Image (cartoon, rainbow, N blue to C red):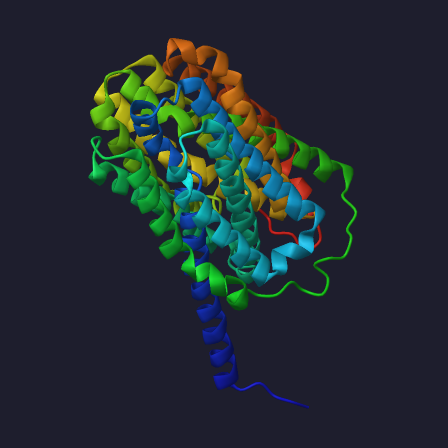
Amino acid sequence: MSSVTGSDVTESGSSALADERGILWRGALALAAAMGVGRFAYTPILPLMERQTSLTADAGAWIATANYVGYLAGALLLIVFPALALSGGFLRCWLLVLVASIAAMPLSTDPPVWMVLRFLAGVASAVIFVVSAQAVLRTLRRNPHLSGWAYGGVGLGITLSGTAVLLLGSTSSWDVSWLVCAVLAALLGAPVWTLLDRATPPSSTAGASEDIVPGRARAFGLLLLGYFLEGVGYIIAATFLVAALADADLSWLGNGAWVLVGLAAVPSCVLWSRLSGRFPTPTLLVAALLLQTVAVALPGLTGNPVAVVLAAVVFGGTFMGITTLALASGAALRVPRAAAALTSAYGLGQIAGPLAVQPTLAAGYRPALLIGGAVLLGGALVVLALRLTSWETRLETTPGSVRDG
């Protein structure tokens, strides 16, 4: 009969800890490149493009929508072909596409060309996000609350890209800003090359089919709807916040406010993850959505700089926290490919957001922010309904699930 010595246990524990740390910082930097730069660099650069090219607000909305269509396409790709999420070569390929699509933006001033490039960046962002998130969650199966450190990477990317554009100044050219962001994406994304090498491989039962009991199916349906509405509401602010401040004669505050969004997002995921150990996740989701409702609507109601700064901090402190909580909820309900499904719903919402407010842009960006706030309020009400469906019971009746309350 074999025995396990104390040193064996210690070495095993040290190895597991090293794997967790390795996957956490690689995952954080992957999300910084894919989301913080690849997705959100467009927000601070948009006002420069409007001033220095012939880009109109309407065309800018279409370019943003193309990026969100690409994001949805990337998420759906991984739902249809889930094995791709385990391919290191596939992940590396999309990192190269991400960097190239950002670097190519200055090569044209034609909106249709920009739409194609932003579509490709959207696909790359979704692929890197879903693959990284799944790798992190697999590796942290025993300590899922640590995943917040990886999701905080999105805030890091927003902070770095926003700061770069801010330091270049409003007199800098829009094309230089894109090139700087391409360099940032390449540097931050380099650890993607070894991300899957450090991740825990799927267990032998991970791909086994599992029946979804009706209660869990209904709960997941509400989660999907609430997360879809979050995608609609948040993307309106994420796309047009800086332009809205410029529209309100607060251009001097615009990029600074966006940097604050990123700074607030960095620790927010860790905070919300820790709170999930004390409160049911749907309760936290409702609270985060209500806070975000105020944060998105406030700049549409007032141009007071203090209010705008407060709104930026609260927005940054909630939008990635909501993602962290939603993905953890999907994993806890043990729905197959929950991360990809939720990301798809989110992506669909992001497509709908700019299209929904496009007719109002002729009157400026502030009405769009009010619409975004109203949609987020609807999302909070949907998740409140989820909270009232005996959430804990859904998890307790799931063999091997993580109780989230």
